[in-house]
Amino acid sequence: MGDPPRGGRTADGRPPEATVAQLVQRATDQITRLVREELTLARAELTAKGRRAGSGAAMVGGAGGVALLATGALVAAFILVLAEFMPAWVAALVVAVILFAVAGLLALTGKKQVERTMPAQPESTLHSVRADVESVQRAARKGRGR
Image (cartoon, rainbow, N blue to C red; front, side):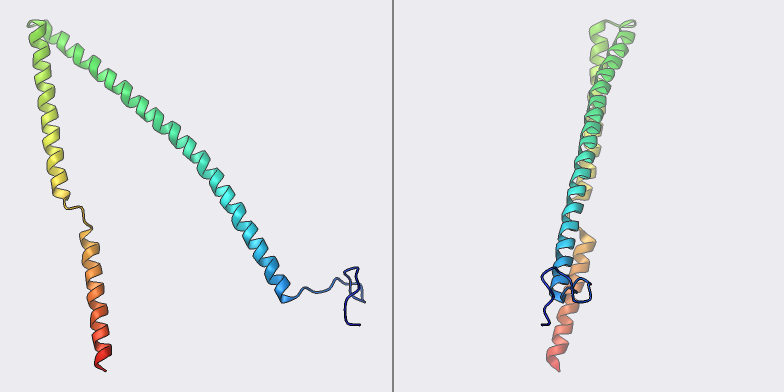
């Protein structure tokens, strides 16, 4: 007698109220669907951004290659200028020695900088963690002393 009719309506014509379990189930379903849709949207967005970043990185790499060629042309021009004042082989040798000297200075400077950063440990974080551990140990000792 208290059951709603089969048509899904109560005696006064309104739809029956959902139980708490049904409401929780609906909310769970809706949240699950929302999370899936958001993840799908995020994946699509990241895919598009990844493609743009990939093509941008390729362009930067291409620019580096062209810059390398331009540097070679500049070195050749410098050799030709020096060749006006000395034999061409001497001019090429002078430019090569200058380039090796620059490369050596860059390598030494880079090596010193790398050595200064070693060891590669997060010193302040390690210090902070050690302090936290000591604090917890002191608190544990105080707790046992009661």
